[in-house]
Image 1 (tube, rainbow, N blue to C red):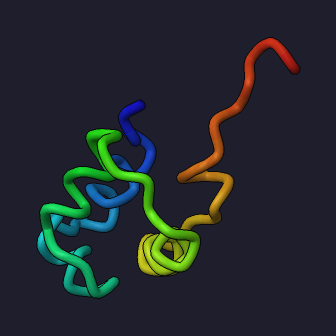
Image 2 (cartoon, one colour; image 1 turned 30 degrees about the vertical axis):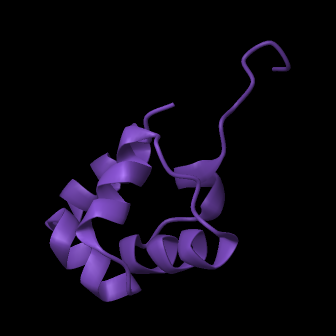
Image 3 (tube, one colour; image 1 turned 180 degrees about the horizontal axis):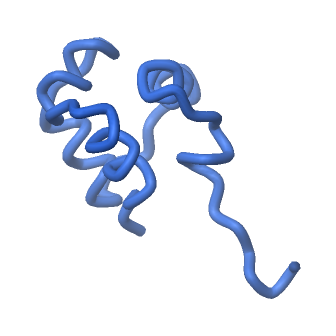
Length: 69
């Protein structure tokens, strides 16, 4: 599943994939794969991304199950 929330947060912070990758210590390809839904990041990487984008884990990585609400 694509991570549109992460991409939107990155764009709101005016960061390219390359810039975000540099800030969290991964490659641009890794950021691209996370946004495309082709890579499951470690918890440490998720936390680093959230801190850089000023978001919580829930805001970027938690999928709400619409049937539960």
